[in-house]
Image (cartoon, rainbow, N blue to C red; front, side):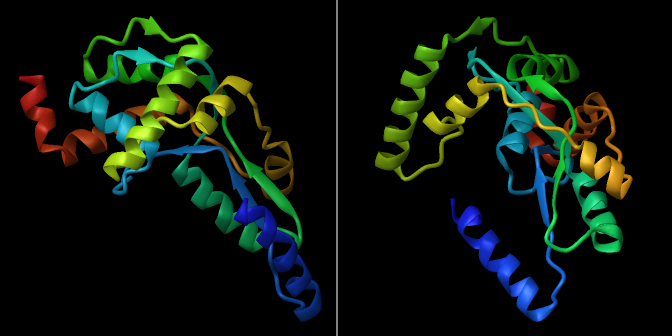
Length: 193
């Protein structure tokens, strides 16, 4: 929400001061070196540690390699037009497919249970409440379940046409994520043994 409020102010500042400002709108970013970790990095670490969740919520979203987003931002600085918005996104992928691919890359059994939407919403409500009580983050949220279930696919046609950006196959991104997570996670060797 704050991004939506700030963007018009930035555009106005750009016009008044003749300052270059353009927006990059990335899809769900994945990639190695996710030290945070973000939600995608945490799912990767969970797979490497053989700690995938027992059930998968429905839905999916568009995904993109963070390295491709960085390259796209450099292209934007070189060739972009001020005031423009550029979506940087690879393919739409179901969450179940992502988890199944991660399981295969880490040689762990994928979760077999697929939650229905109502069940996922109830679980997310519980997770949010538990998070507030314990002051610990949760990977599940009601808004996240809604967005994934909306199955929104994004297109990077404009960025590809105007900036010449390209996107690596998502399978390669996942393999790189797992390789980095295995090298980073001391528990990965223990889980594999």
